Structure formats: C-alpha cells, structure tokens
Image 1 (cartoon, one colour):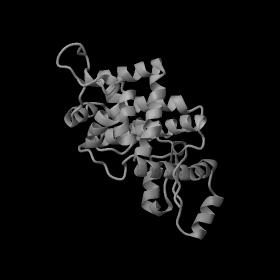
Image 2 (spheres, helix red, strand yellow):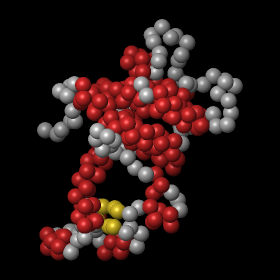
Image 3 (cartoon, one colour):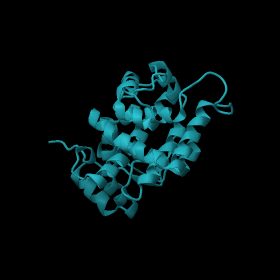
Length: 263
C-alpha cells in the first residue's frame, strides 16, 4: 500500500506546480464546500487544497478514513504536499472532519477535477475517463449520449440483445460458441469490430479500479454516496496513471513507474 501513494503524490505535486489548474480545482471545491457563502465567515474549516489532497489519496490508494486521518498527521511527504510541516501543531484533522468535507463534494465536481487531470496527461498516454452524462436519470437523454457499448460474451442472450439494440446504436454483444461467433464476426461492421478490439482495454481499466481503487465493493452509503465513491475511484486512478507517467519520464526503472504484473 505505501507504493500506491507515491504516484498519487507525484501527480498532486505536478498539479500544484500549475497555478491555473490548482486555481480551477480550488474553485470547484469551494463551490461545494461553501456555496454562495464567504469562506472568511463562520467557523474555521479545512483548506480547499487539503480537501483536494485527502480526497485524492482516499481511493487513489484504497484507504479508509481512519488511514487517511493517520496519514494526514504522520506522513511527512503527504503533509508537505498539503503545505504543512511537523512544526505546524495547530492544524489537526479528525476522522469526522475529513469525512464530512469529502462527503460535501458532488460527484460532478470530482468528475470535473478528474477531467483536469486527464488534460494534464492526455498528450503522453490515454488515461481512464468517463462521461457522467450517461448516468443521468433521464433515460431518453441517456439513449442519445451512449453511442457504442461492448460486453463480455457471457452477457449475450436474445432478450439482452434486443433490448440493448433499441437504445445503443452500435452494440458489441458477442455470441457464445465458436460457430455463432464466426458467423457474427463475418457479418460484423467496423463499429462492432472496433468495440471488440477495444474491449480488453475496458476490462483492464475495470480491473485496475477494482484492485487499486477499492471498486470491488462500495464502502459508502446512499445513491449519492455510491456516485461519489465511483468518481473518487476514477480520480484516484487518473492521478495514479499521471503520476506513474511523470515518474517514468525521470526514473524509468523505478518501482513506482512500472505496473504490477501477475506472476
């Protein structure tokens, strides 16, 4: 687990070195934390950058709130990224304070921050991203947004195919069995073949989110909690990927720059 935090901290360091990006992130967080009220009035709360850092490492490293709270007080490099030092005895973070502030972030806000991270790394390597608009409750609008979707072979059934074909213009739903699959591929259009070719990448991204970003089981409650959890996991994965790319550019052989591979 200590290895997981290295790329995330490197990404946050990079983001902080970009004042324009940092300002956008702080503004987004401020809108959720304070809304229309002034940050200078009322009781003292957490700094927007502190919230950004702790929200990033929570699922970026698959930590519980207890672990995040412990790191915020004892992890030297994390505190350095937050702009704190060992001598800063007046800045304390309780488990409840961290949780309450992170839970005030809207999933849409986290997704906007995630897109800023993607923009920082997209010129070097494709980073996991998603468009939240496909999860809107308006199913009619949803049908207009999702243009292509691919599934595992085991998901195929005539009913599934017929229902999905009504809402997805370009559906990749492979048939089971060697003979059926051969016939399907022979008659497939370019969109089907492209979706099938890209599907291993989708599976790889899902596997990374499950193993490294706590997406095997959602630990938060309520629908909005689930949506926030997913958004934080994807933000964490994007930060991890960007950080690994940055580290690889400086130290290609370092452990933090390489992917873990099964034996």
